[in-house]
Length: 187
Image 1 (cartoon, helix red, strand yellow):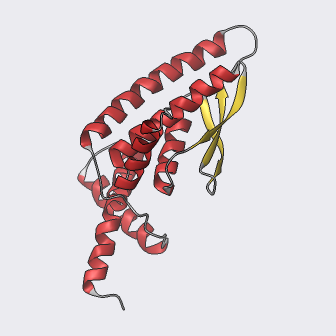
Image 2: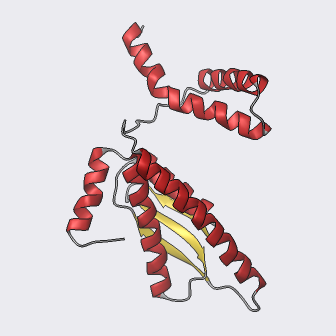
Image 3: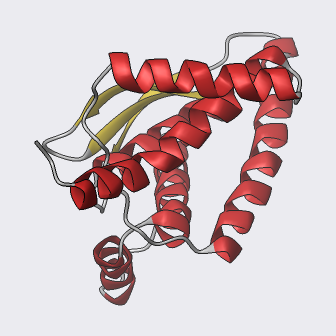
């Protein structure tokens, strides 16, 4: 039987996910009311008790400034991507596309997931495969006409990785990004 301290530590590590489940529940219902919060808590308790998933190891580091920068740039990229895809859809002819291989620089499952989700949410690109052992994302991207276009997309995804690491990555991940910059390898 785990000690009280171990149970408290486990609860503390799960708290961000628990809060996220409650927020997700309220977003699904489209309202913030006492009832939606209460039912969200009940659903979160049931989900966390029924589905015993391993606790993801959070870095314990949060940089609010880079988190805000990430959110603002992400929202801007959503708009730009939507306009670009709409233009491609309305333009005559076929829209070129391609598969782009993006080797990531960090070795963290959570960072890889954040980068993959971010890249997939931006209109015009979709992660079609991940290679966890090699830390590689494969994206289907609209508008790829040349190797230069693929390189531009690859650098864009690496910039998202950089922003995510600066916002929530561990100190080791941050150091890996900084080391790559010192070596002259830039996204």
